[in-house]
Length: 161
Image (tube, rainbow, N blue to C red; front, side, top):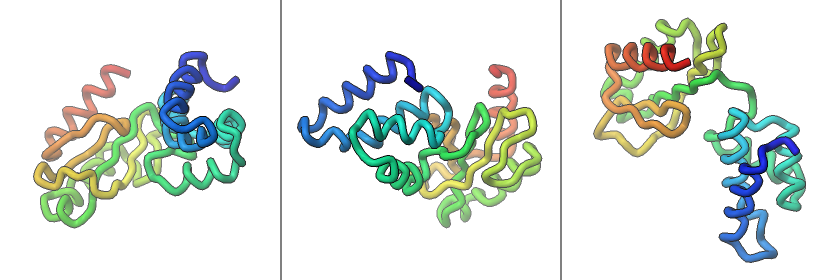
């Protein structure tokens, strides 16, 4: 078992949302739970989720690689996803991304040498009016991310590490 008992209970709860013969419909939820516990979705985890849901591993792999919210490679303790789509770019998203790159010393899809941060270029996050926006660890939306706010967030995350 690659996950905790609690994670399997959480997956079981997601499975109950679907007809008994369609438990594979919980694949996205299962991947999200697995990633939440392990930080990323490894090939072993993909096989584990597939076996647990009774589906071919390639089908789980297709889901994990189709959606950009799943990390199929190890990432830092904190992922910072900055939106660079046109509305955010017009409101400073590109400059915010460049500031993050300089501050962290990495490019998109790279992790800092200390393993703390992974920088990801994101697609629209549905908060164009609050641009530029950034998603921290896939769950915390950060709005109007000017350089001083970016620096403050990085400082807070470093302190909490």
